[in-house]
Length: 210
DNA sequence: ATCCCGAGGG
DNA sequence: CCCTCTGGAT
Image (cartoon, rainbow, N blue to C red; front, side, top):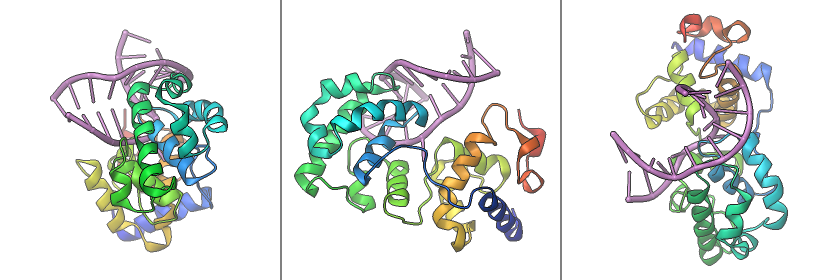
């Protein structure tokens, strides 16, 4: 996609949504981290439903650790992959308490060393909790990058690197949320709604999908 | 490449 | 029924 087209692409997404943000509910970097770990292969609506009950009783790393894995499992049983997630959340909280005073480190290497935290989750926390210009390539952004021609790539890392290269600096910080929200509600996996898409004329795929 | 794994939509 | 949802570890 040409540079001038990329510029228009982002300008239109910005017109639609001047101040985009996550749809996960959270009240601290710690809660965002936990919500993102829980969101793997799950909808944010489902995650919010569970954290609405969980965070009041375990709002911090210390209280989550005290809650224990078995009780945590009960709270998140409605979310897919819940056994692995419960184990990882407790193990992560233990490290946060023992090594970081219960706080979430604003550092990629430290984040990715936490159980259940990979590159994508680290990128979300760095961007949304700490305001860094990262782009977390999830299922939506991977699909949108390839489908539209904005940032084609075989792997999520390919797409991430391409996005970091083509995205103008002024759009970098919010790019993650513009792209994910557009992917979630318009450029959907099954039935993309090209008829109400604001960048359909810039898209290399248009209505050819499905 | 495979496993984990519930809810919601079509 | 099938597919998808802000993936990560082995």
